[in-house]
Length: 282
Ligand SMILES: C[S@@+](CC[C@H](N)C(=O)[O-])C[C@H]1O[C@@H](n2cnc3c(N)ncnc32)[C@H](O)[C@@H]1O
Image (spheres, rainbow, N blue to C red):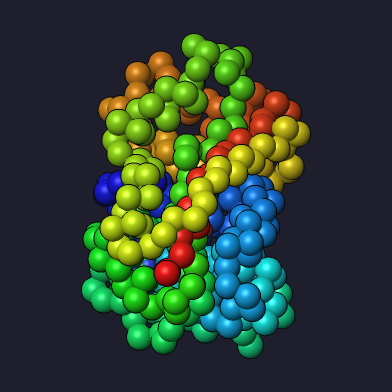
């Protein structure tokens, strides 16, 4: 998810560390699409060394990955690394709420500056964060060095921006959301490479790659809030990038008091897909 100005960031865009809206969005994302997290950690477990003792969550955000890893590996210490103190405060609060605070270590560090001294780890997890750092190849080398031999790195990225709207929203031209996403892709949102060659270059053996699809056909109530938060965020980046009639339709869909607006419609779905790479330190 490319360098943009501070006001126009997608979740996962660079320089998002003073961005309270992002925290809310990450939590809503986990609430609505979070079922995939337990699937990914189950898959990760198949590739992880037995009984990992230390797991690092790189660019932990609000800690949805840290919590899922804590559930999957109940004996492991989880080290949540992020450059945002407010994100880490949320990770700490979430761990306290879930009774795992004593197994959590939070580390405030800007990975663009240097890899933090956290000791060696058995598993590393980087979800929607690797594409954000300035020099991912250097961070991958640092991760490789931080892992114990046989250790596992899991990289997760969104394949596409989450989709909520029907093709025809009942006003304007069909295909609004697709055109929004095309405009954002042209602006570099959510851009990330296939990490396989980068992982191999850093010395990893890529043992598996899998795509995880999430689809909630009858969207839960929190989906409307997620859709509203998400589409409001992308709306801010679309001025000058989307045709005027589409912008008007999007504004109408976002208007809180509009009868066919997002918060009142029953035809929302939530669809998303992520790719995960499992890479082993030999
Ligand atoms: C899109 S969020 C993903 C959060 C979480 N991993 C998830 O999947 O919900 C990216 C996170 O990476 C962090 N981040 C970005 N660049 C970073 C850097 N250079 N050093 C440390 N953290 C960074 C951001 O602060 C943000 O919390």
